[in-house]
Image (tube, rainbow, N blue to C red; front, side, top):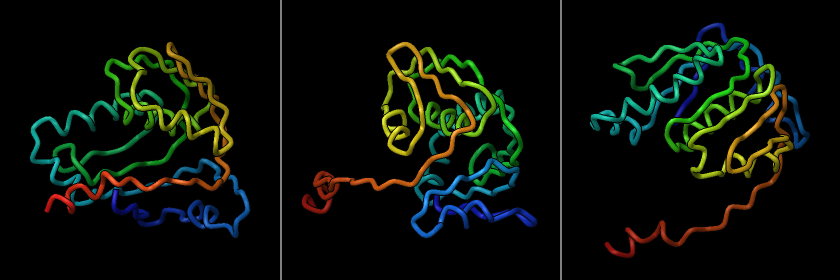
Length: 173
């Protein structure tokens, strides 16, 4: 995602808090409206006939949590997210998708209650592994993932090693 712009009249205090001078800050879940604009790579997906299915698969569980957003441009970016209180869900993933799983877990952080994911949860597990690093209590095993809502993330350093395979294109050229 290349940009996230505040809609007219929306609060920007959350991002201001997140830039705190090295102190851990609690970002309260406040109703806010955002317009999400995709970058060029995402826009290229528009040409792929099945690309919109991914947006719909992510939208379904988030709407069940009470999220409200509008997809424009025939279900492609940009989309408009209207902030409101959301609640936990007990959701069975029908396909193994790290994107869907991450969207639900990130929303569950500010939801009321405990969110439970079951079904096809065997996909990339970066989110489940990183959330505890940022102070989140999450339980994950091969059958279910449980995340209690109302948690705040705490800033922490992350070391990301270089990946020489990203240079393969340039070496081959």
